[in-house]
Length: 79
Image 1 (spheres, one colour):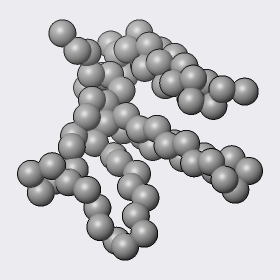
Image 2: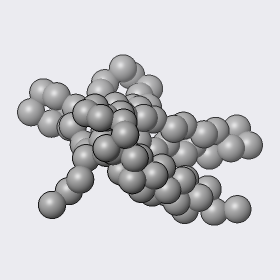
Image 3: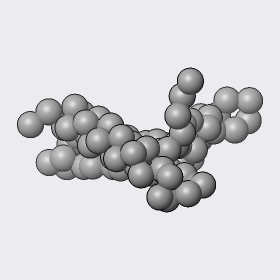
């Protein structure tokens, strides 16, 4: 199983379904993080929006201009 592509596909399907129901759902949005540990050896992390998962051994968190980068969220339509 190709975990990365399966996860990517799930995110795209969710995004499409939420956008199709945007009128019913009203204003708002959502962010999400998915983290998977496979066979105690492989970590796959995916995110949408301003939520981030960061793995750090020393507690250092990478930042841009002092902040974590804000990404797009489910229901944001990019023009």
